Amino acid sequence: MPNITDQEIKQLHDNLLNYKKVLQQEIREELLKQGSTGAASLAGKVHDKQEESLSEMHTEINLAMMSQHQHELKNLERALKRMEDGEYGYCIDCDEPIALARLQAYPTAVRCIACQAKHEHA
Ligand SMILES: [Zn+2]
Image 1 (cartoon, rainbow, N blue to C red):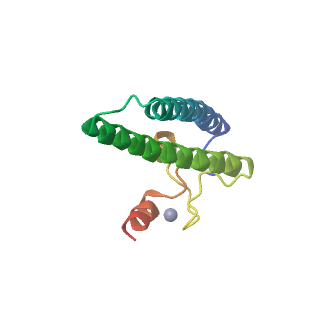
Image 2 (tube, rainbow, N blue to C red):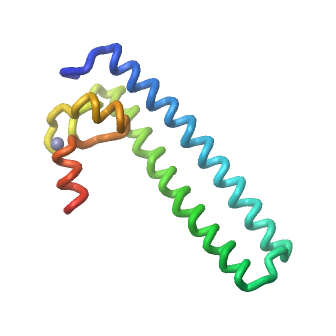
């Protein structure tokens, strides 16, 4: 792991674990919200047409947010695995080390900035 000290790796590992906790908590809360929304419409509390479409919209937003969080969680698990395997911090596209500042800002980053830009515009 060039350019990154053990201390820094430990810090990044802690960041990942904290982030994981936050994500899991958010996913749990979304599931709870999802459950109560479903229960409310089943109980026939939503009468008004406008209210109904609002609640549908809400459900869609929740689902979109949830899949985003689950996607993040997957990235996070992958980052932790890569850390275990000693592959963490290397770009998966060009194999160059990823800048420490980037890893600190985005602990789940798997690409260097140049490759990420290419990836996003591909
Ligand atoms: Zn790269």
